[in-house]
Amino acid sequence: MATMITSWNPDKKHSDVERWICIYPAYLNNKKTLAQGRRLPKDICVENPTHQEIRDVLFPTGLRIGVENKLYPRERSKEMLHRGRIRVELKSDDGTPLKAEFPTRESVMKYIVEAIPKLKTRQNRPADQQPQAVQQGSNKAKGKKGRR
Image (tube, rainbow, N blue to C red; front, side, top):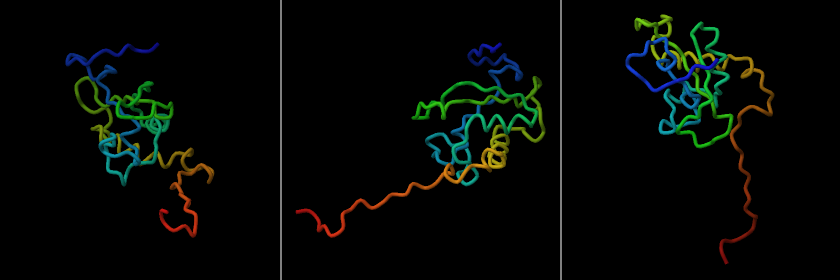
């Protein structure tokens, strides 16, 4: 049964879902600018991560995670591809990190961007589905001389 998430309250424990950190795919997308919500340097981010990939990468770490059907507020596209928010529990009720290798939100996000390219779904893409630069053809008719 889904847990009802209420507004933040300082009396909540770190084990409550409301206190878990949120990670949107836009935080890790190298196609986004800082103004569009990217949180890490562009050179270490991945291209168009999905919430499923983030979940698949975090599951083996042993951290408690939750997936929510939320849309990032800065996301302009309302497509299902851009939906999804991952919640991750980082701290125990006394405030100490659950895992020593993940003390902060940034450490979790850096682990995710290192691990997503290693996923089988990322490595075994057919050539026609690989992200490519858009090629633009020249539409000018040859031999025309300016405006008449």
